[in-house]
Length: 478
Image (cartoon, rainbow, N blue to C red; front, side, top):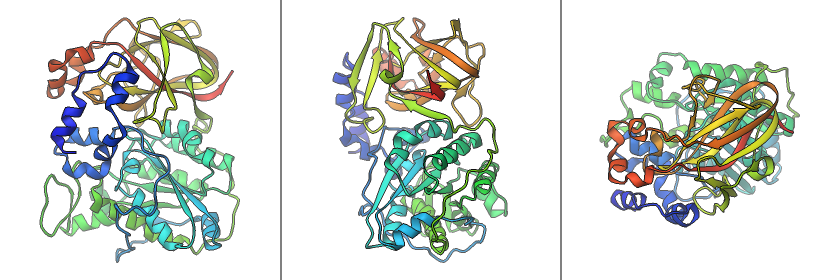
């Protein structure tokens, strides 16, 4: 599918019903064209964002895929690249003894993407143990960090009992309390699951590595890794040195003879960049395979008392009571791996209510041109929110903004998974979410550079709709 066909497919007028219109248009055949490995064909940062935030990917993926090469460890050596610590002893013990093993990958768009490191890594692991059955899980969700990661961990990974989990969230906020929550959930679920933190980098951070330092966001995650004895790998170190020597362009829109082009946007690797990331993991695996004595990993006292070990996500009808004006709609295609069904409402005033004991709640929704605004009532009182989330998260605190707006600039003429969280004081809470009668100023939100579609097709945007996939909690339902 070329760019013109893709543009045509995404600019058709919406049908009245979500199931009859949106899902009909966003068929699974679009997905390969929208994932990270095709970033090479995009020309602008906006197009790259769109490509990396298309929807869900199938959970299981083929480790024998022919779409990526079998990487090698190469000749790069730097003792700072991999911190082995306690290694991955249980994974390697099982693999060395010929038992079936499962590797899970959780992160943002770089994990979700089809050639950004994940499939190359799985293929390399399989090559280390050619006679072993290796299963692989893709729990990447584009544009999200450890806050949502901690909420969706059990639903998308732990229930499948992986032996090894790679965690990649360095460029998506690197929110350390969320990372610790992910680690503690894994340890509590099964102390024999091995964990490896992998650090991707964004534009400008190659220079930090080249100068012998570590980016600040990654240094914060390293403290968590060290506290739990978890191995970690700095994936961008070789690329940083290649850039320093003039052999690589970290960000470039074209092709340069004799040079490696790592990315188009400074974040999402092209296949050549993904191969460099995977080669770093391959080097780490060769170091760690020597540690293969089974180990039950300990759970020390937390670094962050407010870590996210109590986070989870729930199907809407499992947790909430819905007013009139809602319909349950099956999700079969673009978002099926995340949402078995959605709850949809388009009538202002439609609401749902749930109760929980804890410190935060949130919504995992599908954003699009018609996304509306929500009013929130907590314990019988309206709850206005801060205008900006906490850095590195989508966590809002009480503030002055009367509505939670589900429409943002990334909803421009496309549909995407997105989440929002609201922090509360500890305790029992009753939460009511209501679809607002007030409409957001979507032209203003899109800005001057993104108004073409809304000006050509205002009817797509002049609606107020919510597509609810999951309810997020920090705490427990009551």
